[in-house]
Length: 119
Image 1 (cartoon, rainbow, N blue to C red):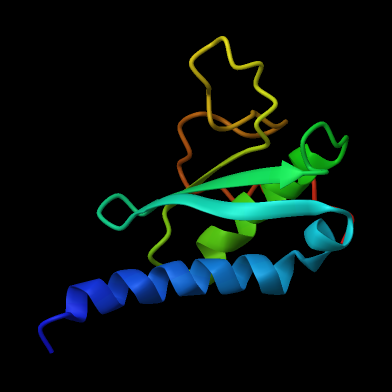
Image 2 (image 1 turned 60 degrees about the horizontal axis):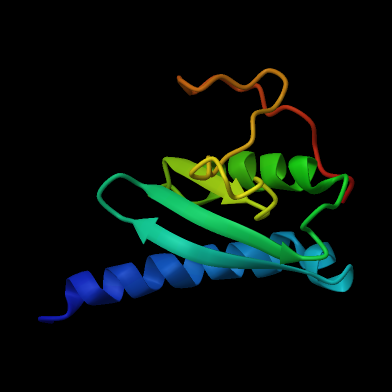
């Protein structure tokens, strides 16, 4: 099939969307949203934007950590997940990913998942 590469990309985006819907229905139940901003198949990076009630929510850092740790385990093509709530202040050029206790910027595959979301 000549569109195999296109189909693979669509399949990956569909699996990421299904992952978000299946694993985090509480986001929607609490008035939040999670949207895929970008998927880079070559690097295995996914950018997720949490919005709605997630912006400013006190447990959104735990939700982000849960998304990061679970998605790379469940979807083999995904190497790294960047997630943001849009609450970075806007004036700093936007670091996409907050830091968490036990997390380093050079992720060498340690099993430290950090805090878990309460769901």
